[in-house]
Length: 348
Figure 1 (cartoon, rainbow, N blue to C red):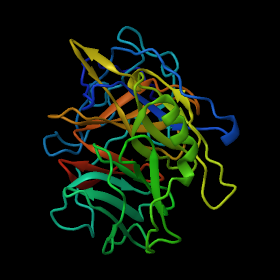
Figure 2: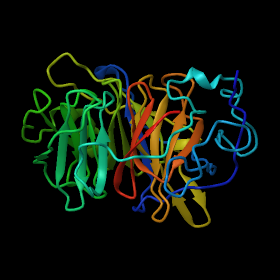
Figure 3: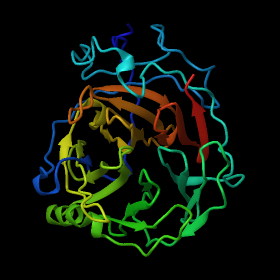
């Protein structure tokens, strides 16, 4: 049994382009019983790892003790006891996995450069924001086919930095409101269909809570399970909160959520600078959250882990100089942006 004992104490972290602190919030629990976000203590520890699959990387890495895979624990001194004797294969997204070099995604426009990117867990729908700020969605019938011609989706202007997320069924596309005080979404009845005008109905409770705090938000990210939504709340230490949506009606109702913290998603303070992490996507089992450290010169994608649903994230594995990482349902493929170019890597 391979256990999670290896560690890397080097530091690689990334700044948020805003001076305010960030709270990563994910939504879990019944709508009427949502806990409200609260501040968590920050931790000044992060870890760095190899860069599998990038153009500057060595050949694909294996999870060996020689440092090809770096585990990052809750603190700089001792391994996190929650992970010390956990079999890596416990997780759907195995932290010891090796990934192939990235390759282009069939059917997407040649030379595409995206500012934001999202793929559904079944690999049948993809969304992106181009350099001009336009939002596009493309679909395909099965994952082995190329994507078809994309459609341009009419969304309102977004707060900067621009971001978006497709729901697991490909029917909802969420983005940040122009004033960054909440979220809105566009929806469609079926894949290939036309998206309707933007609406805030599904996020009414979230938006009301954000306004009541006088906060702003960023980084919307639907969970792969179809019932979880992550986001960053600016103005508090980085935490992760989760809320399960109510699906009683045609439109799910998201709650404000309750915090989930841990060193891998907390701010890191180095000298006079503070660096932040931003949620992007999650695994189908809910135990892995994919985040980005958006350092201007070297963006780093990470998979962060917890041992139970609702628990804190206390393990981090650096994936590469990527952004917008999305796993498929089996976590056998990773879709991501490298230098703005959409790429795909296979688990080996």
